[in-house]
Length: 114
Image (cartoon, rainbow, N blue to C red; front, side):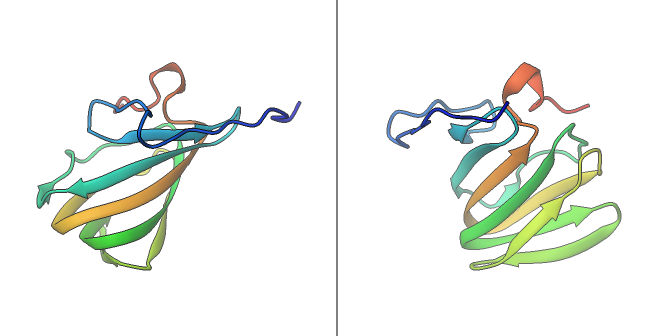
């Protein structure tokens, strides 16, 4: 069955997660979240997640460490982190990004590191 209902979420009223992410629209198989004005430094320790992440940088600069590789993420860049891949983000300057996760990160504690 597919999502057949409109799911509109206003950023002003959206819930925040433990890592200060804002949870946006979501469906059965995908969810969006916003990382807004994340300050410099490590966003989280290296982790593995049960979901795939695709993201888009709105502003700022971060380093993505993914399975021993490193790449710069800057305004206009997009990226993919496969499910179960070891990764970490190091914020180089205040960072704003939008991510989609599949399956939805928020459902059944999938945002928790493994």
